[in-house]
Amino acid sequence: MLAVCVLVLTGSAGCDSGGGGGPEAGDSATPVGRLLDATDEEGRRYREVDAESAPEAGIEVQPEADDSWDVRVTVRGFRFSPEGAEAKAVAGRGVAHLFLDGDLLTRLRGPRYRLAAGLVPRGTHQLTVRLYADDDTVWAVDGEPVESTADITASDAEPTGATQPEDIEGRTVTGPAADR
Image (tube, rainbow, N blue to C red; front, side, top):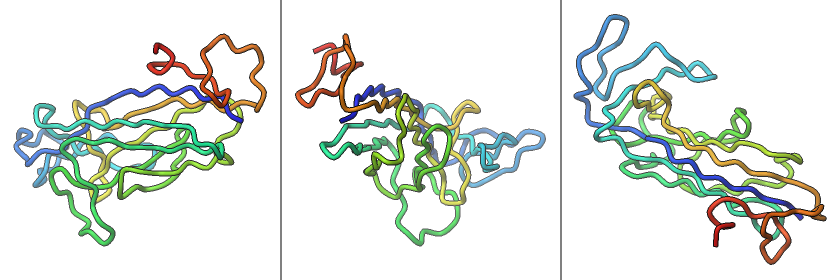
């Protein structure tokens, strides 16, 4: 059995149809947004878009009976690209990368993912979703990547004197669900 702590943080996500201002020194003019010198951990450049038209991204993680997690990515103003999409930045379109404690788990072309229990060792971990354009640039707003993070906590089957409310299967519940 698992103890689960879920915290959903919503960050800005962004795609616009260009018009993010003219390029500055060191920046490249692009059809959508502008490229920044900043990169993610894997060296992919940030693609800056206008915050006013930027959609939002969120992540929700729910425990499953088999000790895995159901991961749901929510986006607004963003569409997941199908397999085989042209490798170019298109306003409001791309893929999501899912990271566990900063390590890439998978590329998502849709809003759902099943996170196997075996991938999450005992303890508290951060699950982050980040939006990318089809050209592998990172959508960014105000110089920050478009991402959202949830904390999940895996523990032994037997709760040890937990003071938090428990669901019917004995998993610790914190955050919005614990306030009910």
